[in-house]
Image (cartoon, rainbow, N blue to C red; front, side, top):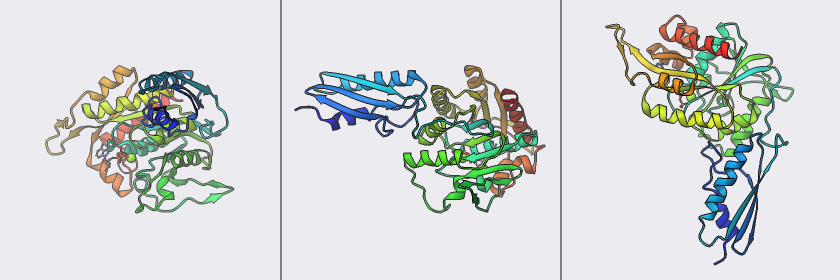
Length: 342
Ligand SMILES: Nc1ncnc2c1ncn2[C@@H]1O[C@H](COP(=O)(O)OP(=O)(O)OP(=O)(O)O)[C@@H](O)[C@H]1O
Ligand SMILES: [Mg+2]
């Protein structure tokens, strides 16, 4: 039986874009498949400034194709288009000095809480701050920042909503909170791009970006849309969270986004009745990971009722109790960030 184009395409679906959970076929990288008997030539096209990514895709694709029963030879040609006009063009956004992603491997470790309070802490230090909620699967920033109105548009651009001196834009403003959002890859890409380029951010020292967990489409789109200054990784101290955060770190490194530091959240619990410290999720994980990467452990945020209550009530901790242990910890993270990205 001669090989078919579909067999080749199906096989290539096993090859992931380096560092990401999505495959190269769904990304539209595979442009042409030629078959002559048992020999196949595949043309791919890629927009990246990193030739190593192209090499890796070529090698992995050829290895995968050589495993196909009945294949004679398989040659993959990757056409590199550095910053060609197209979906994945990176454009520096005028007026934004630094854009910082807040990311994690695992869900629920406190990214949104960190993104909100880090933004507010930077603002307390005198910086002009924007906060972009890219968690298209479960936007939570509007609730945390007590925003109930919707952004207005002028001159084709959305005006961010200002809350506690921070300029906000969130998927939560654009979708009905009760309707399930099923965003497919291309939609995610477009949304992220709109958020970056069609919002009137004005002049900002920092644009803090809250990401969904993991290494999916939103992260990839983001890295390819915006020249990120770096990423702050959020983890809890225990091994299961660290395993996931390492994967996410690997993804950022592959797309050349520097890791600025690690924020360890839910680090310990200071019991109000006996003043003892309890390491509920273990201890030392954040520091070990920071040492491994040679980046600072920016802060250890304790588990505090006030953090959760502040989030739910729309009065973030940095607004309601900035002098609390966690408030001071967020401020410390902001100070380290400011030194790294002055
Ligand atoms: N240090 C803390 N002390 C107490 N509660 C916290 C702390 N950090 C986060 N929380 C609470 O834990 C819950 C999850 O936090 P958050 O929504 O910030 O996580 P996330 O990583 O953004 O989650 P997702 O992956 O779903 O986006 C929230 O209810 C939040 O208020
Ligand atoms: Mg979140």
